[in-house]
Image (tube, rainbow, N blue to C red; front, side, top):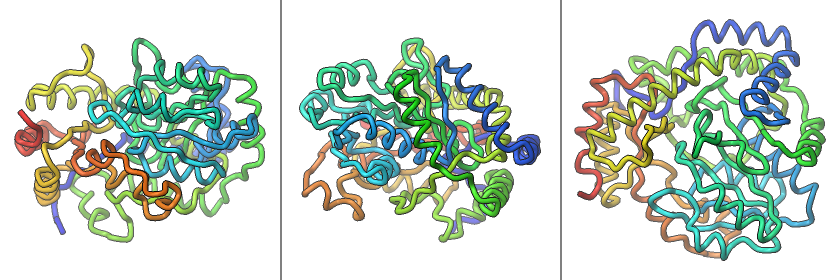
Length: 394
């Protein structure tokens, strides 16, 4: 167990002023939620926005709405992605169908996606993992050939663009997350965006059945957010990181997904989300730029992207393990990503009949992520770069 300054792998800006806005939002209740939804509609130039209890809940709501518009029941998703995506598909009563990924982009393998989508496919979930943009236009063409919907998982890509277009607005529906460690946070929370009136009507029907968060839960969520505001700081983060029951840094499959409307308190905590996002993404872009130069990485774009975390594929699993162990010992926030392909999650592995996804398995064994958030100091950047210099093949 490390005692002393420890960088969290991911962190979002949150201040005492935001906590005050959270209390004000709790008093105004539904009005604060309506204002937040209006902000997102205007900012992203979409007709409809729906705020719910988490990014995972936003995906469940979206999938349930699409399910009501079609008799199809299969959802094609990446074989390497956040475990919560698979949990949302199962929670919506749908069948997850996996497609292997491209190891260099984390997006779908183009040939395999074309082979996987069929007349049974309700929708394809394309993710922008760590903020790396997926090839949405390509996925859309595949979906259109088979009459399937396209859902954009932009949970890790709030405020990012590709080709001048805002991520989260390019599919039939898009979802964002406000969980801890996301680009902006209120502790938890999520948003569904769509430009489609029929999809919006279906989402509205689902959201209309959701209960408000219980008052006791709202109070507990606010307390957790305040504690996060304090203990996310590097000089204190080692304390919650050392408490096993908190599960910080562990990837688990969520067996329960709370489905309710976003609370007024959570909406209030997001009142200044635009300002926080701009400052956060500026810091992330600067960190990515530094690591790109220091590690002689090939720049993916002319403009430095503000990745939520900077993903690197290690030369082998042993090197990844050594770097992550050294990082943990020194409190540098370098960490592995998802530990297995979706097909190997114990709770749902039987659903995939022993199928293998080689690229997803290699990423699970070799992928490392570097922290890029605003708490990473210049000294931290130098130490992280030195630690990771021999991580990737020359």
